[in-house]
Length: 220
Image (cartoon, rainbow, N blue to C red):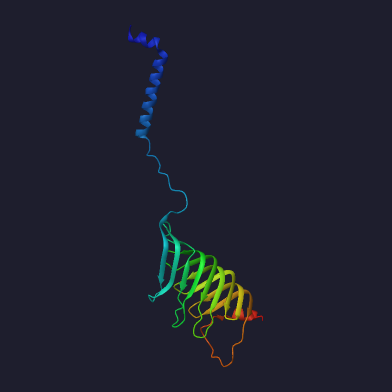
């Protein structure tokens, strides 16, 4: 039997074999001559550069002294912007005044930029300073605070309430400078102030209201 007759009698199997060889050869040529496959870009939230538990963080001012200290049970550093994402921080802000204790506080979450110049305290924020040298203890309740630790400044657009001894102040929106102990409440200001004996010396370490607040007038 000749090869030609054998192929003629088996045309269907032969055609299948020829098509399979042609398809394989075409795929091989496409792989060899075609462009390289594209890489898949990562899509999703930024990944953590590292994660710390029970972490301690310090920032220093231009004078080389600590301006901000923080302890947190969980901290993440992101690869994209190298900022810090913090859970349940407990922090201290330096008073920068001899003999005056530092401010201590807590918040629900925190965020610190790469250089440590900007701090965001998210959720409820509580600050307090112990009593000292005849000045009563001071407590501040507010939320969503933006702070500049190296400048010792803070501000918020949320409601704020400060208690110092028997005196109370509350308002919406707050700016404060811890270096000169000045507190400014911006809107809807109310206050209750207990007068001090005239023989008591004037103190400059108690938070002072700025003039915009004084125009609203305290209410007893």
